[in-house]
Length: 164
Image (cartoon, rainbow, N blue to C red; front, side, top):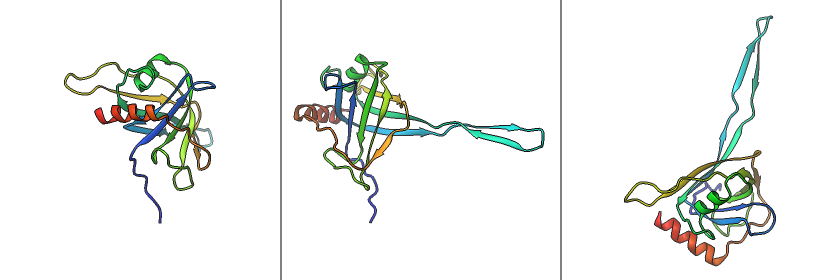
């Protein structure tokens, strides 16, 4: 029986360079890699036929989460501080702690970090919503080890997600 993806939580890791000093790991409300197909360009030729070429597709990592400005745990602060940097990302949409497999894969890739909005509508929780352009097509991985989330980080992100 095939299992349809039901997102209970989405574990996201963003990492700049080696080490963990410039890493973010947490859960977000919305996490998806969006594919925009390339545009078709048609050029009529002298023999009455037409030549068509399709440009490359583009990919973005779309994220939405509650604004958390804690420099050690907040996605909003991480994006603001590291705007413009290229980060490796891992997205496991099947849930934290789920081992990758052919039926529950995860995505890896690289994206350019863009800062999200600061603030929002009065009387509501503020959210950060960004579309991070991918450098190349992300890879669908069915094997490997996902980065482990530290216990304190998981609690901080759970609180931020519940608040939003």
